[in-house]
Length: 637
Ligand SMILES: Cc1cc2nc3c(=O)[nH]c(=O)nc-3n(C[C@H](O)[C@H](O)[C@H](O)COP(=O)(O)OP(=O)(O)OC[C@H]3O[C@@H](n4cnc5c(N)ncnc54)[C@H](O)[C@@H]3O)c2cc1C
Image (tube, rainbow, N blue to C red):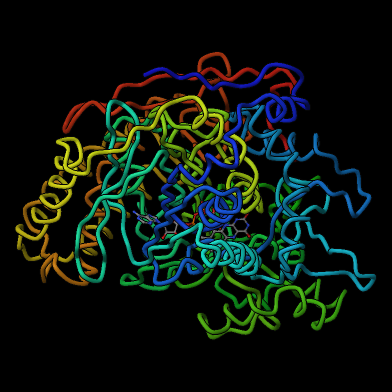
């Protein structure tokens, strides 16, 4: 497997401009001759479909939801970063780049991260032009708030519904192109496999989720914009449908998988309430702008929060990290929440919770201001917990949330399979070992609306793209394989539900490959996953048939891939003998208990190559060069 990141030469701040100035183009008359397949209609995929349609390409977009505008991006709450410096508080493109690369513990490419910071400002202008109703100051200027890992206010937001408003903006642009006849959207259609002909991505096999019909679609490039794989943990803040199957099946066809173990456990979700719960709800990081995180100083203190006096409370983030306080990055906040709970100071029925307290902010600003900022989040919290957060502190606990790992891509967002591009959360590119809050929306929109329209042309202009014979062996074999895979799941006809196995695997992953990892635990995890996978293929019950709507079949297929992906995550975590960002290996920590990197041996992207069923994937490395930032021990103290 060859890993050429294709980073343009020249000074960091000029790379993207130079790239755009010199890259090959496809003429307007030729664009309509190219069909582009886009899987996913979130901010990355929806943005790409709208932008490429506008450019004149023939686009076919696919999603499994009943409408493109229900892609998971709609769930995003807190905001989107940009280096506009409207607050005049010292922000610059370089500072956003630096915060992002430091936030990721120096495990991302400089060039990609700088480009992201650079594009961030264009995104805001673009979204405002689309009509996205960002919050505004009384003066009319767009408002900003602070997010973790930053000492400036650069996060643009629309209450706690930023993702929804941004996705509606992208969806409007997408629909304009549908109406113009440039884009065709196929909803309730799930990609089952990738068609690679002569080493080049030329199509996908999909299943119509209502009729069960399996069919193939062909194009000159395939864009995977299929989101993250946090649901490998079963309980996560992601929607239940989010899955890793598209990227995992592309991995099996030859796409390198980068840093699979880099996952983000978000510090502020509503704690799990019961054994049969199937989903966790995020309480946006933005709440930490005004909420103070604390636990009782004394272990086992069961008094209600109102009865614990100030001097018996430990505002541990403010105490340990005086510079950033409650706004430390997510990995740091999550680890500390785990630590205080491990010390027996957790709160709530399960003792796996910490308080997020708004009393001081309400006293300072008044309840109305807090309601304006976070009203819908407070309502959501009250609906779920039956407690009023204006009166009682919220209870929160870390939950799996985001995956920084994903398919490896070069600067052009192309994977190791020519013609296969990967955008948004599905790729690995910009966040290193930990993503800062409000930067996933930025990346999705940057990739979709700004990067791919420039980089795709360079690929298409280079080569010939002969028509694919739909009945050729390469196509028939993939189609047949996809059908047989589903039939195999139906044939097991065992006694246990898909969720039974998924829940069990999630518990293994959380325990062995979650907030803290160790070599011993990861070895155990791999053994347990293999054992569970065997039981799954012997005893899962998938009722119904493949010829109609069958959600159990959909779930079973996704879980089958998750077993293998989970093992790959453990393997990657085991090989990375250092701690960085969200990847915390118990064996590698500083005296203060912080993540201890090993820049000499692990300053690289780990890229895995599929070697066949039951075989250990092969490890490759892309070295990371840092010419513009100094690699320091990350400190938020
Ligand atoms: C609760 C929550 C709150 C968040 N809040 C923020 C925030 O405030 N700020 C921020 O920056 N980030 C936030 N994030 C992260 C951010 O929302 C996501 O990382 C981002 O929206 C992902 O966008 P995407 O376009 O890559 O993928 P998604 O929006 O997840 O879209 C994936 C698309 O792929 C399709 N798809 C997947 N698999 C298949 C398949 N096999 N076949 C066909 N279609 C498929 C789906 O149908 C969907 O259209 C939040 C995440 C969560 C879970």
